Image 1: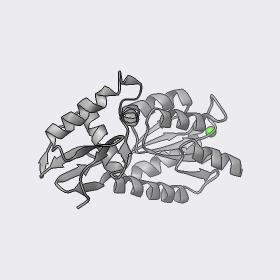
Image 2: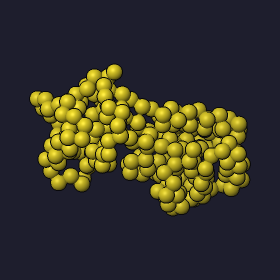
Image 3: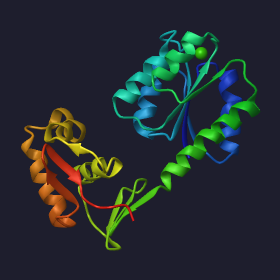
Image 4: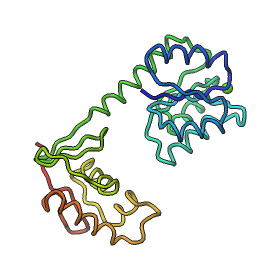
Length: 221
Ligand code: CA
């Protein structure tokens, strides 16, 4: 797995890096917020181990976590925090953290937490879902239709995944525009065009037009 350790105290960072690398992970290290931003953008880690107090700010870890989530980071975040107050814990988890350990921590305990978190990643990575003749693999972002790979553009895939994740929901064109295109959409008309693309690449039954918008059209098999 790809990991990023953000920790300014080298005496804490070094044994963690050694242990994680010994466990077979590809681990990068950043010692301040500025470098962490660069490494995060380059590495797209599965898990960040994120110290809260960084040279630039007492809340550096929380700031980075918020930024990362806002820019679409989907990996896990484990906070390393010297503070042990409940409000800070809650704040950390609200900022997009998945777990935290309080310093000083035992290295074996930290490694156990990392393993537990990474199990979630590997489960999600092998996650495949099948609806009738349609099969999606979240990890590889691949789509099979009648056991044949269908080439979808990133937007087509994102739109299809939006439907598949909540197959019972009716989506308005506005919602779909917001979640798939965000600020880049010129108009909600783009949804109609992409629904047409998906129907022609797969089958017209995959996405149904219903009162109020669109709905996924296949049944779980
Ligand atoms: Ca620190």
